[in-house]
Amino acid sequence: MEFEWWHWAVFGLVLIVAELAVPQFVLIWFGLGALVVALLQLLLPMGDVAQILAWIVASLGMVLLWFRVFKTRLHSTRIGLADAALGESGVLVGAVEPFKRGSVRFQKPLLGAEVWECIADESIPAGERVRVVAVEGSFLKVGRAHT
Image 1 (cartoon, rainbow, N blue to C red):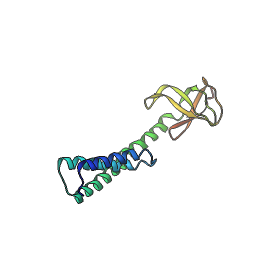
Image 2 (tube, one colour):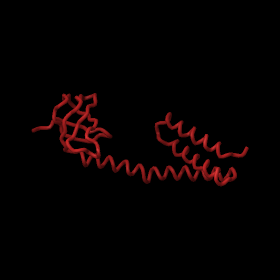
Image 3 (cartoon, rainbow, N blue to C red):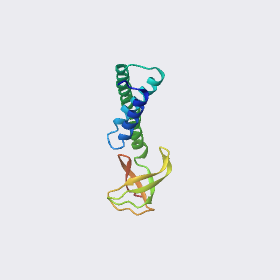
Image 4 (cartoon, rainbow, N blue to C red):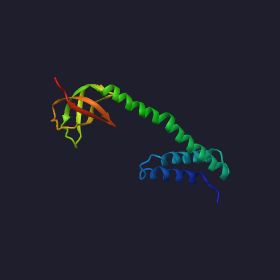
């Protein structure tokens, strides 16, 4: 059986859809590699071995691109959030409790957003002034602002 371009397209789409069931963010790169091979096969027909080698190279290229470019930018954004947010004061829009998230609004936007989800070690009602004490993942940890 010889692989046609649409075999690679279907294979790529199946892998991309399967990514929804796998929480590791891995299959998408192999799916995109298969779509690249489908396009190559459509434009420049190749033998089966060349197609498989092209899929391996394209998939590994996608994975390397993820780790070298995109993931590095994502990490630097988190560091930028910590630098921008620590010590900032805001007003709680939604009450926060120890095991329930709230929302805090800042007078000047942090990384382009005025409202951020937050967590706290104590119950703080909406409308109270808070200060960012830490960044935990994508949440700001807040405490009561002492005036």
